[in-house]
Image (tube, rainbow, N blue to C red; front, side):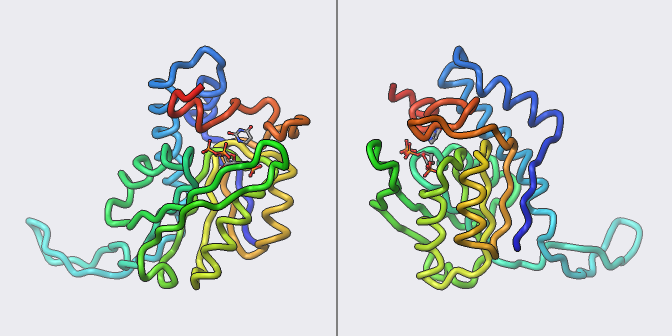
Length: 209
Ligand code: PRP
Ligand code: URA
């Protein structure tokens, strides 16, 4: 079974509380998603492989460490996942970015895929799939199905708020992947929204409602 980790650093908890507040503006919401994603990136990238490199300091030659050049891809689930891309890219600027477009049918709560655009060598990359919300888990499961169909093998899922129902569904469907979240909330309501949650992440990020 992959790892399930709640990244509960005080800075993340503080920013997440502001993010959840109803009165937080679109501008502030966007900034907070970006900052939280960057802070989470520190932990999510913890097991990136290193290699030795010989360098010259002003004093002497020395063997030190550098990232081994393992290829990374950040794959946001549209729309709301887009808000998490820049924060992670600021830590790993050489990563490529793929996109998976998906929306939840409001009646059935089933995800509908409408776009997949990935780096050509996605099968050789370590992939961070990002989406602020893991609710029923349908979108995450379908996005990862889609990546695996294209040969992807090394996947981590990173979200801000998860419901227990979504975590269970994702772990059952894809037991090999690691899941990182900034918070594990109580439950889903009858409309499939996370409680206490933060509302509709896409609408709050883009100001569409
Ligand atoms: C939200 C969210 C996830 C999905 C989570 O997207 O960003 O992708 O719902 O729900 P699930 O775990 O039950 O599938 P939404 O469908 O609202 O699309 P949007 O980001 O374009 O607004
Ligand atoms: N999608 C969201 O944006 N919010 C939720 O609470 C559930 C799904």
